[in-house]
Image (cartoon, rainbow, N blue to C red; front, side):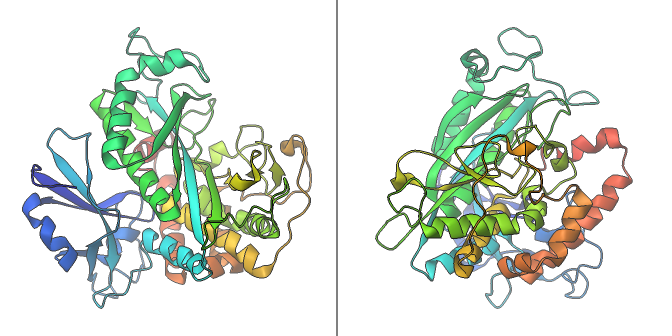
Length: 439
């Protein structure tokens, strides 16, 4: 990206909650970023939702709250079309002083998982479905947005309504233009089942790029919504009685010749597909904290609410946590349907892809695929039922310890326990404000 016409840049890395942490800088300093001129406390990427240091985190006082070195990622600079001042964002990654990747940086965590695939000569291809809600946040509780055409508050669900998309045409036009400028492969948009809820799919691409783009797309959506006079949120459940926001991910694996290893020419799929499905199912209960990282996340994970609550798989069945879509065997892939829109895309992909690879390494076999309404099937392994249970399960699970670095497990558990305590001290009716744009 040509930065010569810009006035400022932002440098930012992704913290454990998916928030951007970094600095505003004069554009003239951009040339020095690759030389390690940008520094920031290592602990910054492991603060809690409100930006507070995590108590007893050894990154703070035991290290003297030491700086790390921030270096640009291969994603490169992208424009920030939601700002009035011409500006660019340079995505960064955090390193120790001696050049080692800081494994509390979620992007490094995903890179570590993808490196294990690369050791086999494989490449992961992924796509995301990004659901979000537009809303009016000016009152004591979230409210549906004002329809730009009628001037009245939206008052009904309009699933797959072209008219509702057209009512917000100015916003979506800016969103597609912004996505194009940022190199984000935004595909079709639909009006979803909830009030003011929409979905845009991001096209299949290399998994790290997919994670980068999901992270950047969230910032774009939220920034442009403010530009148009309303708010946008990826909260898992903005309204108690409306559909929640998910972030389904589709993935396949290519070998060195570009062949899909999940394809054996049959409708069933290859043995490697079966192994990967088994791995995802085994890891799913203990992965709940990554797939549902906030207290609000668990309002979405209830039976019959179009979000999975059990570790089950099926062919062409949207009540399953793991769905194998139909179509040509050449496009055989896994759709992982558990994650809420409030996830950290790097950690979500790391735990899902790490689980799939563990299943392949172990030659694991899944149970028979489920059929019918999976909410009505008894005896299936369940996701963690609440936030506290998810933290405890994640903390002690041996498969999670095999998939993720110890540092990110320890730091995430400490942070989430601090957030759990923090919300207990805050009035319940104000909790939504903490999640509104922070996720």
